[in-house]
Structures are given as structure tokens and as C-alpha cells.
Image (cartoon, rainbow, N blue to C red; front, side):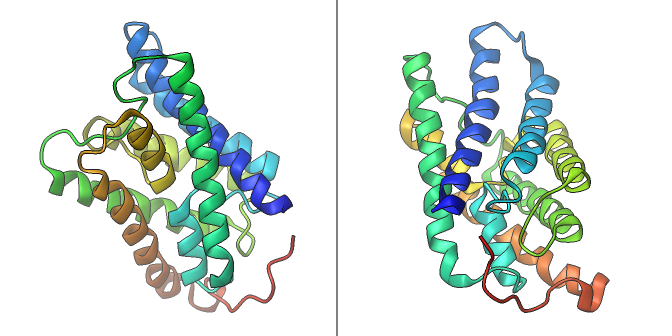
Length: 224
């Protein structure tokens, strides 16, 4: 239960801080700014890797958990409970933000600007980039340590900086699902569920191609 509780806490913190920054920016007339929102997402990921990385691995993202399982670093049997824990944490954060900012129309939900196809491709590519970085710096299925926190947080912030204005730079189905369902802004939600998972899966063969046996090795029981 410690690992599942850690994933709930990590996903809660990610969604509360990240989408909370979007909400605060909108109600304050742009006081946070797009750059500020991008940095908040990167910084909260960095912080949570240090806080829960040695407990649950600090996935905080269903696409990352699926990517680790596809890379044979994480047992498929634990994917469902991890994803459930991440979604529970994300929903708790969105419900709290809804109570704090009653009447906000989207609660930081990810919505495409322009065509859905363009945002879909952007989400696939930036999640692919994120998963490649995670596979390179993680210890098995665990994101932990200063180097992992810096690299992964930097990739999240970078993707948010350049892709955020178009696709929202979700890279995380739980991060998009929770505010969308709580606020009712569910249009084009399929993009943010399918594209990150596809991007994470595409990163696995690329990692194998680049790193050969150093990337994806069979894993035994995931240590709590």
C-alpha cells in the first residue's frame, strides 16, 4: 500500500500544482504566465521524484507506468493498481481546485488549439521524448535521485514551454482526465489519453535501438 499511496500523493501534487498554476494564471489576469506554468510543472515533478522516488518510483503518470511495463522493467500485473492510484490522486486535486475556484470553466484541462490531429502528433512526440529521458536516467522502474529529477523535470518544463500553447503539453492521461471530467471540458479528451500512451510505447524500441541491453531488461518482483 505504501507504493500506491505514494503514487496517489505524487499525482495529487502534480495536478494540484500544475493545473492550479493554470487556474491561478487565468483568474489573476496572467500573473503566473505561460513560462511560469511550464516551470511549475517541471519543478513539481522534480520535487516529487525526490519525495516518493524511492518508495513507488515516482511514475505519477499512467503512460510512464505502461512504458516501464513495455520495457520489462515493471510487472504488468501492477499497472492497473498504479494507474488507479494516479487517477485517484489527480481527481482529488481537481476536486479541491474546483472547491477553491468555484465556477472555473476548465480547471486547467488540456484543450487543443487548432486541429486535433496536430495536437495528437505533438502529444505523441513530446511524450516519446519524456519516456526516452526517463528510461535513460531511471533505476529500473524507479525515477529517483538528483540527476533523474533534474533531467525529467527539465524535459517536462521544456515540452510545456514549446508545445503547451498548442496541445497543452499533457504527456499524462491522469493529468488531463481529472480536470476534464470534473469541469466538464471533455472535448477532444481522447487525444490526451491515447497519444501519451502511444508516445511512451514508441520510446521503448527506440531505447532498445540506442542502448541495446542496457535499456530494457526483464525485471523480477518490484521492490517496495
